[in-house]
Image (cartoon, rainbow, N blue to C red):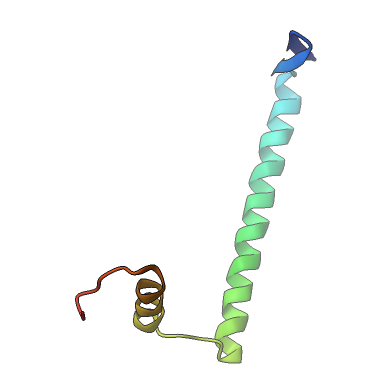
Length: 71
């Protein structure tokens, strides 16, 4: 049920079972996205698409004008 104020949706009321299904679906989606991101990272490692963190951080600092301890 959607409650409106001045014709605009303000509050949604649903039963506890529907809410629990929504929460579980969101958690499952989050886990699936996390697993997919980890798999993508592992594929990058296997393909040699790596950059040392120190070099990446230096490049970002240079790009955004952030002073580093090396300056």
